[in-house]
Structures are given as structure tokens and as C-alpha cells.
Length: 577
Image (cartoon, rainbow, N blue to C red):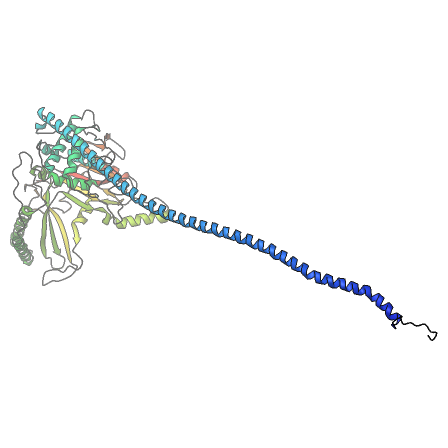
């Protein structure tokens, strides 16, 4: 050894290296431990992963189980929903079927109710007819039906169930028409003809009113009134909604136009042959050849009269007489062939007249007769005349704010206007020497004057409302002074006898309401020197005030108040000298 410290080890390794290795040994051990730990860590991770996978697998199985259960529940729910939809659809079908069956049952029930009601009504009607027939037999046995005169004394009120006033007021005017009750007293007591039964029942109403003059009214349960309703339903033609104007059942009765009822009643009674009346001559057809020949002859006569000078009085008088004879024959031909003429002579003598319609050219003075028809009720159209006045009436009230005065129309002026009218638009004069358009006018005048002149005041307007103009009419009416009579030297009656042209008012029928088929009807009848107002079963005598006479009532009522609808004028019996 060379004396220096050998820093190398025994094996020649340096000490520093040995120390270094000694130091590294724990490090290596640590590294090995770390490597072992690292080797162990993957296995732990694997275990953890396996645990996680196992856990997830369990969870997945659990969720799959839940999903399977939910799917099962969903399928079950779908089945339930589908079953519910089927049930709902079935319920709807059943509901529709039940509704149809209920509708059918309701129809059956309604039909059964209608049939039962109808049969009940028929049964009640038959029972009423049996009761009335027994009543007629009892009265006939007592000798009352053999009366040949039904005197008319005091006014007697008639019961109004609800809407009977339109025919009750008309019956009141007929009862107080001179000669009507006497004519009805000849009605046959028993007959199978509806018109004859209606005449007989009306006669019994007049008898019942005569017997009730002390009480002043008939009761609601009066058999004569009930009998008249039954026979009126059977005899009068259907009108309103295919029903007759008069209904036996009060629930079916509606308010109607009194003029329509009166026209139907007189037309029905006019077909009855009363006891003592001669057999009516059969109605023929119009001999057109004879009528045309008469019209041509009349034209020639008038042409000849126009050619004569004014100083040829004898020739003009002869031509005028010839023209009168032709018109007389013309009217007789038309009268004999008329299908609207009354067959009952007793009623015809009271109500029937005849009017002549003719045309006259204002340029060439050509005159020609166009018709000669019978008349029972003369119509005067008030609405057309008062249209301009009504417009001014409304305009005055609109701008001034002051209630306007109701327009008034004179009856005489209205009759003259209704008797004269222009020919149809575009009508050309047939005279070859004239041939002018718009110069021809039509005229209507009375040939035969009725014993009772019934005037219907037509107030109907285009919109269905009532014309509110007041009609100024008097107690007396002279047709000749109004130029409304075409006579052959003297005015003639229905029987071609000389007669007066002066009439006296004996009855007036009033209406209060907006239309003819609504409102209320009542009547005024002349009793000596006073007027009696008959309003259903109430009878009052007015001596003073606006209601004292029908004339004062007409002009005193406000708009919407009482307005006259029918006027009954009686012809004076003494002919003028």
C-alpha cells in the first residue's frame, strides 16, 4: 500500500461508489415498492372497474326491468284508451239512436196529442150540436121557430170571448138594418144545407137578442151564439190560414177583417132560398154576341147624337132616349147572366144594386159601356186619396215638433174620385178617327139603387198599415147630387121602381188598431134621435161630447184611435117629385 488512504473498497470499488450504492439501495427498494404498488394499482382499478361495471349492469337491468314494466303499463293504458274510445263511440251511436227514438217518440206523442185534441174537439162539437139540436126542437115545439117577424127594439150586447168583436159588430149593424131581421125570420128551421143552417142559426140569434132586450145583453153560454159559431165554421169559406174566419174554439179564434166577414156572410146568405121566395131563375152565361151588338149600337147612337146640332133638340132627345133604351137592355142582359147576384130575393131587395161602368174619350167624346155588374158592398179607397195628405201630415210634425192635424177627407169627394179614374196606361181610343193615347177615362155610376147602401172604407196601405186620415161623412148622403146616378129619366131601385137617391145613415162600424186583422171593432146604431154605441156586451147612449155621434167620434179621435170601417146608409122611401 503506498501510504495513501485507499478510497476504494475491498473489491476495488471506490468508497464513494459504495456509499452511493448504499444510499441507492433504499431508493431502489422504494422504487420497487412503487413499482409493486404500480403493478398493484391496475388490478385495483380493474377491480374498481369491474365493480363499477357490475353496479352499472345491475342498474341497467333494473332500468330495463322498469322500462319493461312501463312498456307493459303503456300497452295496457293504450288498450284502455282504445277501449274507452270504442266505448265513447258506442255511447255516441247509442245517444244518436236514443235521440232518434226520442224524436220519433215525441213525434208520435205530438201526433197522438193532435189526434186526441182533434177527436176531443170533434166530440165536444158533436155534443154541442146535439144540445143545440135539442134546443131547436124544444123551441120549435114551443112555437117560437114559426115566428114570421122578429121585431127589433133596444140594442142588445153580445158576449166577446176574446177575438169575436169583428163579427159581433157586423151582426149588430145587420140587426139594425131595416128589413134584415124580417127577412131572416123566413129561414127554414131545419135544413141540411150549410148556408141554410147558417141562416137559421142567425135567425135564432136575432130571436135571442129580441128576448134579451130587457137584460140588455146575451150571456156567454147562450145556445144561439154557440150554434151560429158552429154553422159559420161549416158554411163560410176558408180564408185565414185555410181556416174559417169564425172559430168555435176560443183558443183558435183570431182577430179578422170585419169587411171580409160581412162579404162572406152576405154571399152565403144570398144563396139561401127563404120560405116564400120564388124559385130563382137559373143563371145563364153572358150572350157575348148580344152584348157586343148592344155596345156597337150604343156607339152608333152616341155618334149620331154628337153629329146633331144643338138646335136640333128633337133629334138629340130621340138619340138620348135610344141610348137610354140600349143601356137599359144592356144592363138587363148583364144582370140576368151575373154569377155574383143574390138568389135570395128577400136579401137582394135590401142590399143589392147595380152599377154601370163606361169609358169616355176626352178628345172625340166616344162613349162605350164596359160592364153592368151587381153590387152589395161599395168600396171607397181612402188610402190612395190620403197618401199625399198623410205625407204632408208626417212632414209637418217632423219639422215643427208640434202635433200635426190629422188630414180629413170628405166622403162625397171620395165617392166622386172613386167613380172616375183614368183608363189603363197606354190605352188607345178605339175610334179610328181619334186613336189618341191617355185621353180615355173610366166612369162608374149607380143604375139600380140598393135599399141599404153599405160603404166599405178601405184604409189598407201598401205596407199593411192603416191610413189614419179622418173621413168626414154626414148623416145624409145624396148620390144624385154627387153625380153618381145613371138613370132613365128617374132613378130606379133594385126592382126597377122609381126611388129616391137620398140616404140616411143608420149604422156605422168602427175599428181601433193598426191593421184590419188586429185591434178592436165596435158599432154605432141609430135609435130614434140618439146614437147607441154597442161595444161587445156593453151598450151606452151618448147624448153629448165627441162620442155622441159617429161623425163626431171620427174627427175627434187621435192617430191610432177609432176610425170608421163600414157605413150603412138607408135609402129614403119617398121618391123625389
